[in-house]
Image (cartoon, rainbow, N blue to C red; front, side, top):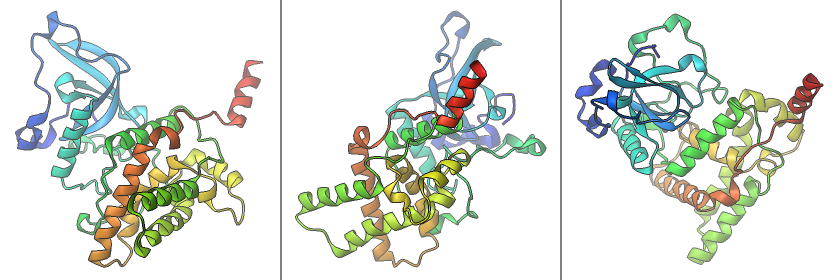
Length: 314
């Protein structure tokens, strides 16, 4: 990302899909800035919108500009943008963002990973100064979009993923383990919910629920952890301890981000794939309905960091 406004790079301003962008602000010298410091926004970069936070607001050449920090990315990616490159973080605007993502064909390419993938550098600037962001570790090679299973994560759960990333990578906090309910508990609750709702559960649906726990146990140590969670994992999951009995909804939700690439390597018939997609979407809706019950509202500071801080203050 450059240091100057680049939100409409590569001719994106002429794209019909961009008509939903906020209007250009005029005569701003006599008005208050439309965005406040520390406000969460959706920032436009190369035609797409990314979750960000306003760090500074200044009036430059008669137009308000904001210094934005992209949530989940290092400060080296912060940049100044004019306010017509920003949208309020509202449900309506999130839907606009999703529509633009769909227009691009999810070519991120792994299921709307704007919260995890660094926005591209405009015009290939500062390529030599690029540094890897602190993303979920051990990425697989890119998978062609036509081989991906599309799973739409509800907006409130997408925000949960952003908050999850910020707690861990920016604030140095972790999910306190073991979690209750854990992943196995959640899947059992979902099983009971489906049984009560439908009266019975097909064998294939039951297999999908069991398979999800198996995928979680295998994926967590190699795909679902941030770097500073590795030590905690080693302590919480010694030999013969399955992660699905220790971790909860926070890490289960991360699995849904990774599932498209994981399933792209599996040989699944088209009919089974359609049923699988529907089942996964239904599980996500179940998580959304129980979001306040299953997800933590805040994380904790690890004891070793807290003790280190206390010693420095002595």
